[in-house]
Length: 395
Image (cartoon, rainbow, N blue to C red; front, side, top):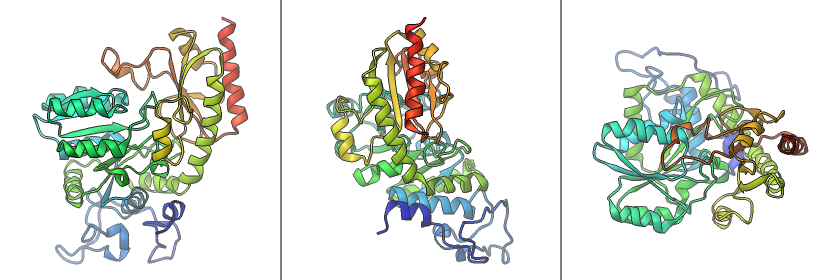
């Protein structure tokens, strides 16, 4: 078995059989010439055509998208991977494949705002109910499963934006004992730091926009599943509803995946130093980063992750007004949504990424600031934050 970095560069990416090009071509094409009625071409493309009889229309299958799917499958492990136009499209398709009206789902008490919106504003209209649960507390999950039969348990670890950690191996065991499925949003960790299927998850969801793409220049998503039959159902539903990205998007994401390992190493190194600085700063009341020994999930994260990630959140001691002001004082940390790019970002979750949770059980603290720590020179990033925090004592 090859190592992660080798798979990221080579899985699904054999030299082009026609020209010998070492980078998979961008098949910017909508349709394909067929060898007679029903006679499809494309099997010579190898792994990228593993699940198809050939190519007929790019909504159904495209060689560049297939190369990306083969690569992500090798990085996550599992039986099948499907690439989508966005992380939310991937989540939506998986939930449509798994849930039916009347089903019940457990979601994190601390979840991404877009995920909450999908459950609260879309799926509830389809009569799929949800219950927020503290996923870092197995006893709470077990109690919720005993209270009402759930179709699936949706987990983020680390969570967005409070960086909570769930023990995936423990959750997989108790979720399966209850007759439910375990779905893990692995966006914050990336497959480099964590592989949930190896820990018992039934499906993994990614916003490939984030760390896998890594350069803030493409939007995409992916689902990796452990069960081939579920993979076939997803493929049918994806083709029927059409939530696929274009070939160029797939190519950009595949290019980003090649450097995922080296980028994540730097993200983790920078984030650790920044979290330690913030933890000792007088204008910060609390820091959320699993790499800190004081973090409640530190030991579990150390057990199931290769590193602690590039996301750091903290609370401004000056309160909500200071948190908002701080977001406008940085110069290297760009005020913006999203995460996982090579450049550092800062945002106010309560007003930005998690505004949809306002008034719900998932509402985030109003004094919370979230950082996506990039791969710039760390001393420069620390100085940028110090200068921004210094403004707290001037106003």
